[in-house]
Amino acid sequence: MSRAADRLRLVMGHVDRSPSSITCEQTSAQAFTSNQPQRLRYSYDTGLLSPQQRLFYEENGFILVRNLVSDGDIERFRKEFERICRQEVKVPGLVVMRDVAIAKSEFVQDQKAVSKLQDFQEDPELFRYCSLPEILKYVECFTGPNIMAMHTMLINKPPDAGKKTSRHPLHQDLHYFPFRPTDRIVCAWTAMEKVTRQNGCLVVLPGTHKSTLQEHDYPEWEGGVNKMYHGVRNYDPDHPRVYVEMEKGDTVFFHPLLIHGSGMNQTKGFRKAISCHYASSDCYYIDVKGTTQENIENEVSQIAEKKYGMGDVSFMDTWAIRGRLVQGERISM
Ligand SMILES: CCCC(=O)SCCNC(=O)CCNC(=O)[C@H](O)C(C)(C)COP(=O)(O)OP(=O)(O)OC[C@H]1O[C@@H](n2cnc3c(N)ncnc32)[C@H](O)[C@@H]1OP(=O)(O)O
Ligand SMILES: Nc1ncnc2c1ncn2[C@@H]1O[C@H](COP(=O)(O)OP(=O)(O)OP(=O)(O)O)[C@@H](O)[C@H]1O
Ligand SMILES: O=C(O)CCC(=O)C(=O)O
Ligand SMILES: [Fe+2]
Ligand SMILES: [Mg+2]
Image (cartoon, rainbow, N blue to C red; front, top):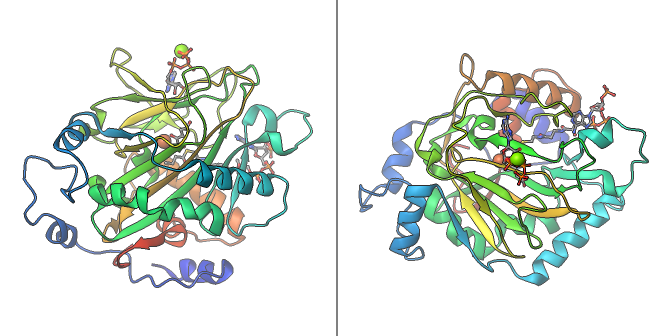
């Protein structure tokens, strides 16, 4: 970790221990592969997942767990979201994003304009989601026992303003992440209400987690694209698509190479989901210079320098600052 990151920690009042960023790949291999069947590379047997679930993840790159988060918890997340929209709480580091079609119009910027909260790790009520035992027991099957919450979002997909900007292009989340190993990263995404094709549920291309990280860039959409919504440049348009329709509280766990996105919201309601990307705390940071991730690195660093009001914020630092330990021990992240 660089000095810039240390300074940022001070700015954000964050005092977690974080040793130097780089460790060797062996650490994670040794920590987790003992008595794991070699055939299943994507998950561990903790006694929770059935053989069918493990095989499904192996083949498809995601699993759907029905009714995992209680209505009571979801109600609390919704209430907190509304308090944030009304600006009754100020959360350090939080990014409040508006849909580009609304941000660039003359609309009154009220709470309805909020399409996404990002980086809510300093909001204790929303961050409770990331520490829910029912979520973590599944996460552990993919990350192992030492778990960092790396990236947090509450997505409030707005009714489409008529330009299809409510869509999220097909992408692999790993494009955003300068840490590895890939298979020790997982996303938990919980529907805060019924999500259907109509209101823009997740769309996944099953099995694409077995491929490599693809080149990403802004899709060429006439109506505009939201900031940082990069899409996979070339994907097979004939690849089967699964529309993951879910009830409130249902949770999907998916691999960071799984190609996914979401269609436009054709309803009048704001489609809500809460999610967290987790990584094993003995993952290590990589330098993405010269790789396909360099374009997102440049964008993130520019925004981070503005956000934290200082120069010299590396891509790696932006992640080390946001990551929070949620289980076990903080090792190299
Ligand atoms: C696994 C991870 C996957 C992902 O994370 S994918 C999504 C990644 N998205 C993000 O990280 C969120 C990015 N958004 C942000 O950082 C902020 O919302 C953003 C774009 C910097 C704007 O924030 P602020 O600066 O507070 O907003 P502002 O109202 O002052 O606007 C400043 C300029 O930005 C523009 N803007 C605002 N929202 C936008 C949007 N959604 N898309 C594109 N441009 C947008 C806005 O029009 C304004 O532009 P201008 O300076 O007037 O030309
Ligand atoms: N050129 C593209 N690059 C990347 N992603 C794309 C591209 N075109 C469409 N998508 C994405 O593909 C996913 C599914 O597309 P699909 O066409 O099914 O959605 P839609 O057109 O919004 O809704 P529907 O087809 O259900 O009416 C969405 O995430 C969408 O944003
Ligand atoms: O909730 C959605 O529409 C998907 C969001 C997503 O995939 C992302 O932000 O990485
Ligand atoms: Fe994503
Ligand atoms: Mg379509």
